Amino acid sequence: MSSDDDNKKATCLVDWTAFVQGPAAANVTSVTSATATLLFDTQSLLGEGIVYDDAKQEVVWCDILGRKFHRLPLGSGTLETVELPKMLGSLGLLDSSSSKFDGSYLFAWEDGFQIYNPSTLTAMTEMSQGEDVNPEKLPTRLNDGRCDPTGRRYICGGYYGDREQFRMKVFNCHWKDDSHTTLVHEPIIDHVSVTNSLQFSPDGKTMYFADSPKQQIVAYDYNLQAPDTASLLSNERLLYKLELKGAVPDGSCVDADGYLWNATWWGGIQSSSVRRIDPNTGQVVFEVFMPDSTSRVSCCCFAGTNLDILFITTAAVEPDLVKEPHAGGLYAIKLAGVKGRLEHRFQV
Image (tube, rainbow, N blue to C red):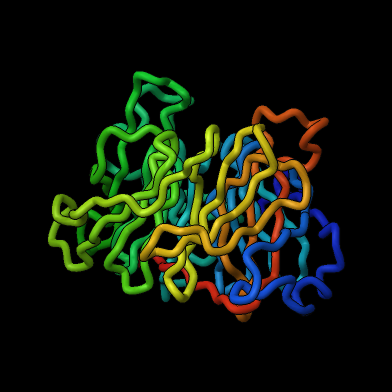
């Protein structure tokens, strides 16, 4: 880490070893719901973008508004936090045989894409080339993102900063050429307000996406052999509609059976949850509830040796901290009858 000031550590609120090595809290094939456990009371303003790095056996995520990068090694259960120079919307793991990129990730900053090492606070590439991803500057910025199954593209879109008249885009970030020295980005979806739920089916042929204010998740046919950005997506269709006033779909992950796990953001209305959605019917078949009044659930991922622990990020932006004292914390639950999938890695 860069310094003692930049690297802050926190201890888990529960017995870490017992939690990780103990029995599952529920079996998704025999019950329809379960309750998560609060692990770290991080009070993140906007915890987001959580992914599992199987090579390092750790989960990593960001606090967008707090400008922080979090790392949780599953061996120690000690949370490490690094202060960042600007807002990080999401991040991608790297596929590299070069030690040059050890500790680095593809970062979707507020203003573009870059390979960056948060341990040393070092930029490993220049910022990506392309149109301005947030032409109105803050509070508009990049938001949710995901590496595609080919490892050649990082799909990530914008957040409109609550500016009702402004519309954002979803971008395809990739290398300009085979030299892998310059990142570029190009739009693939226009007229977006809040990008979320970017994920892929196990076979890689379907991409999921939510423009959160629309309260729905859609699916696209995804062309893995697309010769250019224009031919990546086709056949947009509705997968899931949230018929709940005030609730919107946030970040997602996909399990080994192809079910989509979506974090439901209630924004102060009621305690929130993560919903397991059948990709064929759009029906909710299982739900993980918060153990308290936390209403802003933002993202989730499966982690651990058996990919059976669901980690859940939340947000403390604009909550009533009297009613939601643990908003912004990191939650998790160990499940049986389900297994996650490893994260796709961006090729460097």
